[in-house]
Image (cartoon, rainbow, N blue to C red; front, top):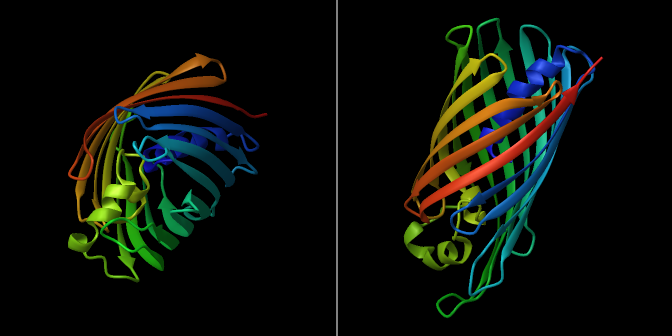
Length: 279
């Protein structure tokens, strides 16, 4: 799941939480113009009016022709408890391909939430295994390293129908990447916005504005990130539209564009459906 997907889940979860023991189930697919394809399942359960658990699993495939397709697994679990007005979120995740690059992540947030605004301090620890196969120019090597990250997320209700979210995160790695020495690494892992190399981020920032129109919602997200291995900058824009399918289900369409110094210009599209309820 992307950070943008987490924002959508968080927004929907806040509505379900009001039901106390509400639940949310979602599924979707994302494809891009570089032959990347991903499928996701996600869900959440409100244990009480102040406690929420969520989980997600996703699998992606990237065409690295003439090499075999690269398949990546993502799994995530999070628990959120609001003490009113302060709250705590704790999460764990796995991401990657154990034969090439994978990471086990732990994260936490301490946040304050009011009627019209919220702010959180975000922390993350990532433990990586990076297996680089031998090439004509490189003998091959296995790296074990980690990263610590700190960041801030702010959400503001600008009016009854318009909200703004801003977030940023900076990563500090235990190894010193030298972009000029990593051309073979980047070439092996890069083909698409879903490629493994995009997990190794030096910093990222996101701004999202949402507009509610009755039961429908438009959302525009702008983000930028810098790669830790190659130093390449990627700028992304995503427009999404969420609308009801029935009384307890929604469908969401998203279209976006990446302008990347790493893998070029890429268009992407996603379709998600959500089912929710509560007593």
